[in-house]
Image (tube, rainbow, N blue to C red; front, side):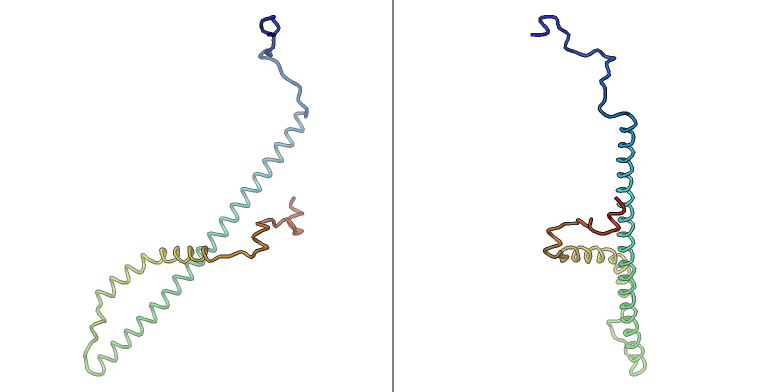
Length: 149
């Protein structure tokens, strides 16, 4: 109806509306948002580093544990072999060296896979308490958190 009567309803291309807030205030808001975003990124990076550190620590402990178990088993086999050689010079057929070496190669490849399986089991068995589950991860009640804000 306005267009039919010849009234211009569009704005010209060079029209700028007045802003409610000044450019200085908008820059401050933008800087604050960028700072907040940077804090979040830093927190996530720290959390990731910590998780990786814990994971590698568990892998190291697991490898050390398996290595000590293997060492004990090998020592027992060696003792059995020595006793067999001492007593009657008959060697047990279960002490096949080629079979032992091929088993060692397989074990090396399976260590990381075993760790992943254990981690999945841990995550499945992990249970939060009822109160903690309801709250989620609020965590904003400590003095440190209040000072950071």
